[in-house]
Image 1: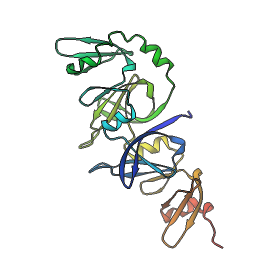
Image 2 (image 1 turned 30 degrees about the vertical axis):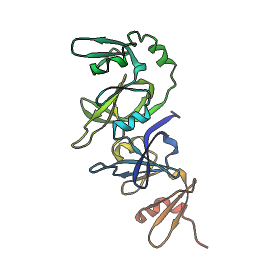
Image 3 (image 1 turned 180 degrees about the vertical axis):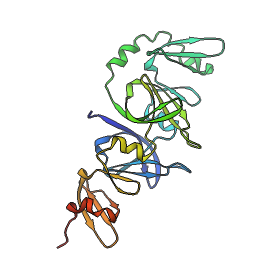
Image 4 (image 1 turned 60 degrees about the vertical axis):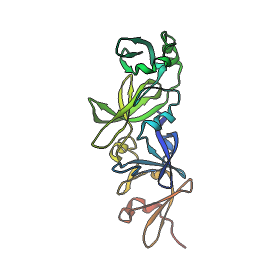
Length: 247
């Protein structure tokens, strides 16, 4: 699979920039952990001189999926996956192409009043290109431990869930199950299985390392794109062949 993507939010000066992008897995030099807000410790992906964190808010998802409809407080819907809208006394119900449903706020009725016939959405979905996002499978409100891929076009809606106390992060409901972004370095290791743990909390792709510089205090990895990071000196043996000898 050549088009594996990570949904990431830009980071600069230890703060989220608000810029949301789809990062190619194959462009990631290394992964470490950072804290975007109190009590949150999630993966951060380094690609060249850029850094990206996983999405931890629905607001960030709105930037990533600008065409999705805010159907209710805390719920973004991919209307391309909706084939019908029904109304009862108490709710509006959205019917998806896979036969599942979800409710939306009645006060937003005007947003879907012209969507009674969504039959063309089936063909629209089949024509959409495949873009595979990396995520952790979620079943019955718990992570299964399986890290895999889901197709962006198969997302039905996004809401928020709580994988552990005081963590409220996006949950992607797709036609083939529910997924969260990777929230731990262990989850990342399942997909980035060719990366090496070269320091506590740091996974590195050695294929992207040009050479290693050694000084009195540290080992510094120099990547082919000229970015750098340090690594644990006690793991010197792993990169010994890449150490640049001083003349």
